[in-house]
Length: 207
Image (tube, rainbow, N blue to C red; front, side):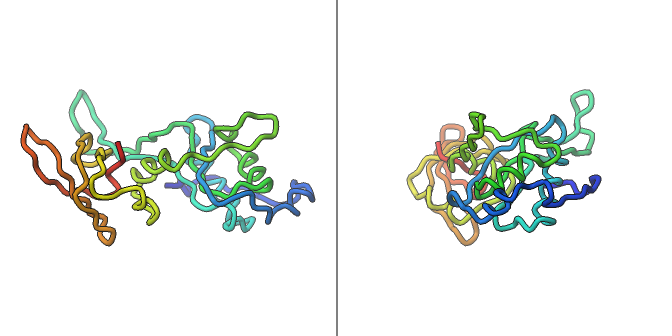
């Protein structure tokens, strides 16, 4: 998810004020997902730079997962597949960061090379709002990132839509969910007939 073939940079705590360093352990809430804006086409570089900061400054207790949302797509020429593939950024100009929002963590992310700011901040020193769970879940599922807590929102009888995979766009009712394997059995309509299909939990989202 993060391109490691980037120019390294030196990172120290010298630029941080004493107040910010003192507030390192200040926790304003539980970890949540936030959207960070970057320069166009620099998403991977910004994600790499932030990951290096986390490692070099020991921030793994404040900043957790850093995700550039990409999908492998076929390369076409004259309307025909070439047999080659490329990675397509589904959210150009944005990186998703799972973190605990403190003054210290907020400062570190905002001042990472390649990062231009946070989405959802009103400015004037106000911290951004986290991405709601129901909005970040489909994003993570596209990357195959499924948390145990995601299953809590689904149960037999719920209506869902397949958001990617071979049955993308299919809508149906959940008949069963196997948390151990991630298999979900759906009842759907196919050419006017009611049939049962099996999809992976990472492929569905609530309607």
